[in-house]
Length: 408
Image (cartoon, rainbow, N blue to C red):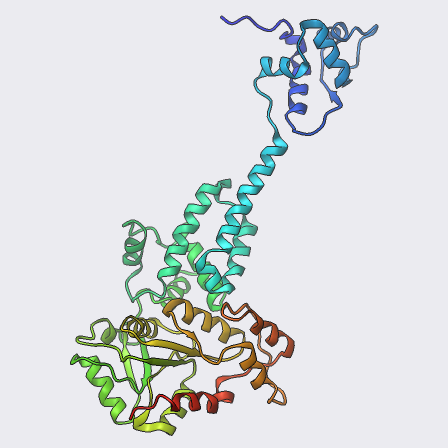
């Protein structure tokens, strides 16, 4: 058995516990309050310090005096003695600082992740999560859960697969990872609610609706996309339908079911323009008829069919150019389309906005503004002028651009 330290006596334990606790704060210590002491403890403290009378039951002792007394008694400072008796001293201040740094690192990593920076409205999601704190107080568990959520968000909008299929495909084969009520499912749904500007659903039906909006288990027939002037190559049914409509000066409406199995289909080379509003599509068709260049409409927030078509066109070599409304929602839709399809902005810069806004006597307020990743000055300009500019206002400019790409 290891010999006990000569000062490790039961009557002095309250004193050593108090000293150990104070020295473990990591802060400067000048006095230590001990106790409560019984009579034996008061006598032991008086003997140790060489006092001519007994201290109170909870005495406050200068650390320098105690250190000197301990040195005289055993030749070692009080810091070493309490470490021998009660174990190593801690530095709680440094530990708190380390943990705070680890917490901050998690949220800084999340705020700087590509999924978030591509759609800055998700910073609201980051702020909500940060206010809620780490998962079980663990940076590692939090980062792991957030990584899974970001993986899912990067895969959305989905291609119409059921939720278990989406989970199995992207979350290590775990088809139940996104089951209703799981922490991960709630994380992703909260991000989607922020992205689409809706409240967090509080019912199973509402949650299914939000997943559906993100392309999970979309109805393959009701999810569709409108386009004009789309003349893909190939002999498959989708390519033929598109060319027939374009050559006749008609729009084509393609369903998700058709786009998932298009047959022989090769997207047109060159630019494909994208508009947010069907009215711009109608104006384009009225002006150019059979000569319409390729123009795809998102009809507001794009559904799975829209994203699937645009990704297919980009994969086949088309360059995508997007224009939408200059309001808060329009900026968020634009960021979403650019992030999910690789499109580039089309007349969507701060200068474009100012030129259009200053021609309006007055207009509706732009609503809640979030950053535009492609032009930091854009939202600053919108916040200054406080005027929304819808696409119809600049339709003539857009059509003039499209005139350069008309079909011969």
